[in-house]
Image (cartoon, rainbow, N blue to C red):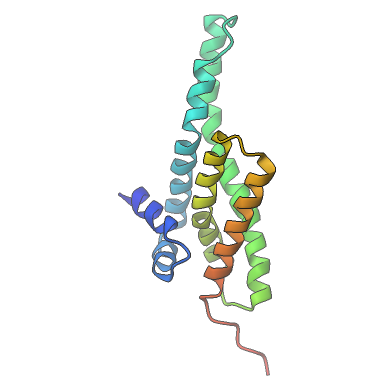
Length: 162
């Protein structure tokens, strides 16, 4: 139930209630949520790559490929989650500073992770509609920046120093 609760609240962003509900979740839950989301989004590509292996592979090399795929692909997803969300959270940190809001990097990291849900789903859908990667990336960033701006401005401003 935790995944679906997080998914529904992520799709409700940038509403305050959804944002505060998601911000109460732990970091391990957030990483697990992103892992499952990316696994589900890339599952069709994973299945297609296994089904359409080159036919001239021997059974041993086919088995090795599948074994490597099942071991290294999840590790790649975790790596992409940690690095990708951290980079986007760094950009959100700059936005937070520009807007003078009280938010810790840890909060921004979680908000960034959940704010990527809708843009990721749209990016995968656009890929199947053969939209160019540049247009897809532009749409991803536009939605993401809008979400982060709306969520960051909910938090109070840093008090001015006398």
